[in-house]
Image (cartoon, rainbow, N blue to C red; front, side):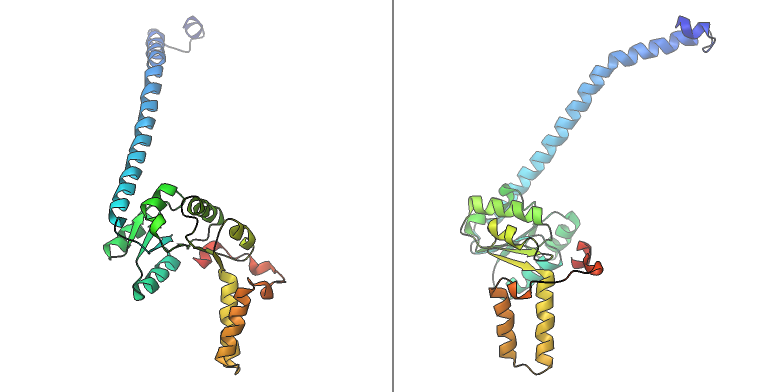
Length: 239
């Protein structure tokens, strides 16, 4: 205070008020910190309670469901799968982390809830132990590996099919327990080749056999691909 007054930086009387304000602030700081910490704890507890309520609600909804398919991710691929399952009369439950998508789809009558499929609690609540299969439909290999770990830990006999962008992570996903891996770029090339062969007169039975042989060989017949500069397509283009 003396230094500030001596330098003439503060008008007479203002220095005392500034000093008093600083003292009050310094004394209040520990309590402000305590209040912030309490707020964080309250927020975390609220989030935990919300997740617990969602899991409980899902468990009640699925209590009488068995032989169903758990769909991890409800984007375009997940929704197309759900439509095909519905046509065959196969029940399903989808887990998705987009609240708007979940709200709209659920309002339309789809079996989808907000939930993280990478959390074992969510999978168990979705009836993992009674499921006939699990389908991971999003293009996220680290996320798929988490789901595979949870499934193999809690329901090792349940088959899991995984969607990927390409075949680069094929072996890793198979080692993690994937029953089937569907690389989109490879399947797309198979479909294109199948149509082309049919158009040039190859019998459809042979076309189907050739495509199935490639799948049975885990796409080895299609390996040896030479990459180009335009091959780094974004994941968003494949959603």
